[in-house]
Length: 608
Image 1: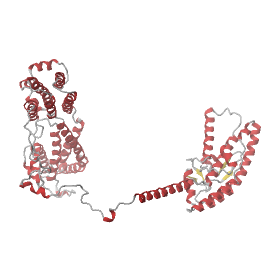
Image 2: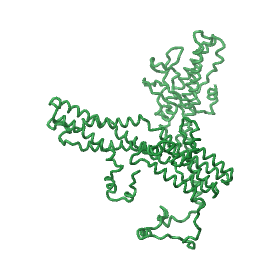
Image 3: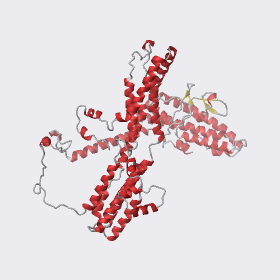
Image 4: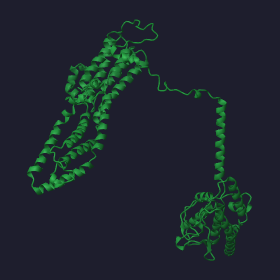
């Protein structure tokens, strides 16, 4: 029987749990005393051997071994492993109890749903209830050792009155290799259908409710069976057990008191009895014993479920509800507070103090609000405040859009230079097909040209560049350089607009007109001559652009100078970079492109 001590701890008091420490039945002392005595006996034997039987050299070696074991014993995660394991076992233990099938709901449904005070009606109700109880007994004797000892065979079930001999023959004629606890539930459903056909069950709703209650009852029987079949994984139990036992086996050597004359750190005292080691064993081993006792609550331990008591209670209560109490109603009469609109049951002298406590009205019932804050405000003022707030938010959004869309002069000049570089790359390519180039290489070159053209429109790039200072600068995107350019501007909005207009005027005068490359690829001879003309045009363009870039750099000091060029040969124009870096004009970082509708030549170049 489960040890019940709820009444002893009903009220919190000084050392309230101390009264429970002297209880023997179901206590930790009863479960653990054998292991505790065995551990203390082994510890004492090792201690006596060290003190009186070992030689001096052997003692020194044992002392080193003891300190080694004591140092590394803390690596075993005792609290972590035991804590999770016991939590899992306790949750599983309570889930198994809630899965025990109880007949209370189904007996109430039968008592009110199956009509008839005659012998046939009584027989239907008792038989249906007996089938439900038989199913519970079959599953309990399958999972509980106490119930199995009470009903070891089906003959005992028949002799106990839960099954007739004819029902046993029918039960045994059903050949199935699995547990047949569900067979009485099927008999229940068939008999319920007969009662519905005979009119004992008045409507389909009652018939449906009976089947739903039976399915819930059968589902709990199935859960008990699966709890018994699916245990906690064996590896988990083995890990916890090995962790606890190996820890205390190491403690048998590591927690020994060594000779204080040797001067070992932490061994200044020789107490003979390891008090705290014994307490540690009591707690950790007791924790493991708790899990061992709760892992299967259908055994015969002191705290296991009393299944035989449940069988007796459920069968007696259910039969009384469907038979003796069917149609048994007390006479109805007026209650004591028939004419009282505010009934108040009396209190005894022991509970009279409860009347002095005011009834709870709510957590905000005692709050107070200042009188000046209790007046309602006109809705017109509230709406006006909302409109002003929305107007301020709208103006702030427009100002942010203005700052983010302001064109950057350095971004436009970078786009123009990249467009020039892309066209120069197409001009310097031979017009005729070079057999040494494969089809894949031609596609890569075309994709490179397209990427350069795209970069000229202001898209960002992650390639590194070499600045005029001679060092290699980290890769900078168009957004980064645009932000750096804006950091040097004045925060005043008027000065920002004036600077933008001046940059626009400067760029309109330097945008070159580049001849279309399609007209230069008609013949091989004309191609070389046009390429030479384009290179000269590019030199002239760069000479015109550089002074304006210098002026822009002087205005915006935060933008680094990336446009220092040198003429390496009469064929290719490259930036002023180191030869081993492998960078070309195509590696110039991209900037944001700003469109100027007033410059027709710039528009034509962007469209090309």
